[in-house]
Image (cartoon, rainbow, N blue to C red; front, side, top):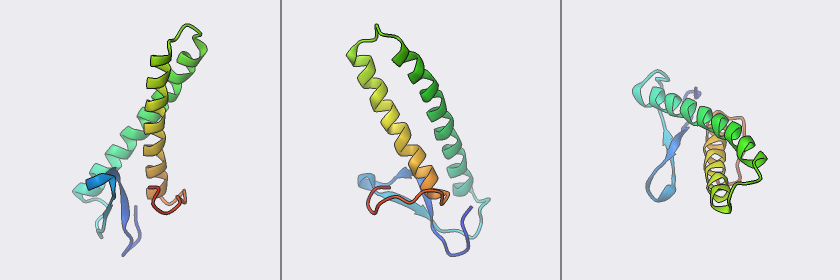
Length: 98
């Protein structure tokens, strides 16, 4: 997934929310495979949440607490998807925003 001598942004944060990076020559190693699995899970969860959000937003009887929860979950999923995109080199994120 990463070129030689290139760091891979991992799909989880380290201490104090700082980004974690992996440096390896083995894209099939344990941490690389774990990161691939977590990224796939995050992308799948974002897709499911997007589908669910359509149902919630179409229902005019939803209370503000449920809408707030939905917004919080969508923001979290978007953060994960942006991290995956950045890791895969398909998205440039402003410094300090990973």
